[in-house]
Each structure stands twice: as C-alpha cells, then as structure tokens.
Length: 337
Image (cartoon, rainbow, N blue to C red; front, top):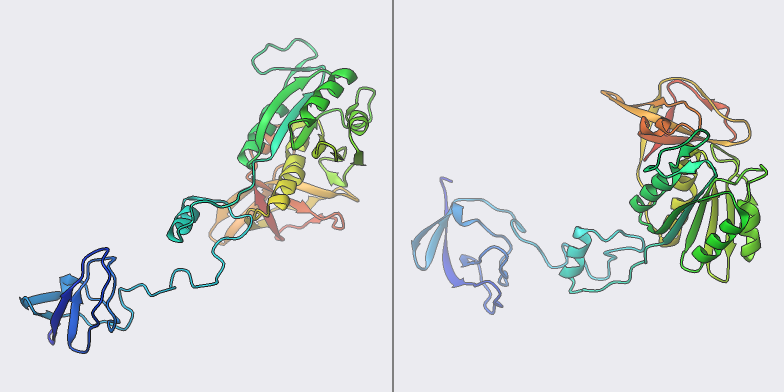
C-alpha cells in the first residue's frame, strides 16, 4: 500500500464486447466484472484498490499474482471432459452447467410407473371406521409415499379383498399400463395367500422366486411378464416388512436400471449387542445419536407388524447372513430412510 505501481490505462472494455487490443508491461485496461480480458493481461485488480490520476493513468495499491481474480479458458469445464454422467439427478446446478454449454435438451429416464395393491379382507380405508376384526390399511399409504419419494410415478393404489378373480382382474389391468406392480399381502402360504399363484398365471416367464433369505421379508415374491414388460413384486403384509423390502428391492431395481447413485451411508458405532437371524440377512432399524466422537447406532426392536418401529428409526443397517450379529462398539454402515 505504501509503494503503488503506476500504469497507463490504454482501453476501457464494455460488457459483451470483444477485445481487439493487447496490453503490455506498464499498461492496463478497465474491465467490468465478467468482461473479456485482453491479451497480455494475467491478473485483475479491483477498482477499490486503484486511484485515478487522470484519464490515462492509475496507481495500484494491491499486490496480485498471475491468475488472480480471473477465470481461465477451460477452468470450469475443460475440453473433452465429462460434465454429467448417466444416472445424474438433474437439479438446478446441473441445469446451470448444461445452460453454460448451450445445451437445452438432454435425454432423461421416464418415471417408473407403479401400481400398488394392498390385499386383505380385514383392511379398511383410513377414512372409515373399522369394525371388530378389521384394521386400518397402512401399506397403501406408506408404500405410495415411499415410492413417490424415490422417484416412482404411482399411477394407481387400491385395497383389494382376498378374492382370486378380483386380484387376477386387477393385476391384469395394472400390467397393461405399469412398469412395476406391487402387491402387499397374500405372499405367505395360507389358504388365502393367492399372490404368487395369480402372478404366475398371468405372466411369462412368471414368478422366479418366492422367498428371500431376509428378515423381515422372507415371503417376498418376484416375477416378470415379458409381453407387457412389467415387474411383479409381492411384498409381505406386515407394514415394517413391506416398507423394508420395497426399500431394499424395488428402489434398488429402479436405481440399477437408471444408473442413479445410491444414497450416502453413515458410519456409526453400535451401542449394544444385536443378534441376527440364522441363515438370513437381517435388516436392523436404528436410531442415530450424534456424539462428539461421531454417530452411535441404537437398534430399534419391534415386531414387523408395528409401524411405530420405523417412526422411531433414522435408518437401518444390514447384518450379513454369515454373521451371528453385531457387537457393542462395532462400526456399521447406516442407510438413512
């Protein structure tokens, strides 16, 4: 500040105009923020650090290094570098990057069209008053919300009675306009558990699995119809199991098909020992507690028919089928809901 440099102002550049004149040692040009830099210039000084003596000369009171206050060619995006990848969610910042390249259209994946059916003679709408032996439908609401959150387009959601012809007609109709049809309930081996049978009859090649080595979620059904290109998923009827399998299977399928990046996992330390189910992968809901040393995972226990088990959980961790459980102090990966 006590030893300014004196420079000759040889040009004033206006916004949006091209520069035709180069500058040399001892010279400078006035450039508004965002304007084009003349050849020969390698740094910019803010006008706040300059003092005009006359129309042709200034004193500069700030020391700058080459490249200071300038954006070089290719500094944001160099030639032949990848800007966006398949599976990238197009947010405001991606739109800005595309606009900066003069790109106004890009190919995107359509939303996966999803139909949700909850089956059970005992189910009634949440707006109704249940009689003895009846319960409120939970799964239609939770699955629709979970699906919408993860990018699905829910085109139909309905509660069905445990009637084979009704399920068959509803499923056949849904397969005509859905990419995936999810049926919650009727996936076990009871007298009225018809989901696997109906799915197999209506599709080709049909049901390819009935049962997962997973807790909760053992009675899950998977099938496919090549004619309508529809995925068929049978979920357990218990709300916690239905939501967990939808998260682990249906959302995973969608992300795999579209190349979408999986959500980030949080590392946390278990605060108690947790046993796992023999021969199965175990999905354990946890509550996360933030401490000065990081996150602590506190398991949330409860039966798969109790929806409040998940309302108290921030996420879940998967215990591998080859492990007997998790030990206190063990670091686990927690997938947030």
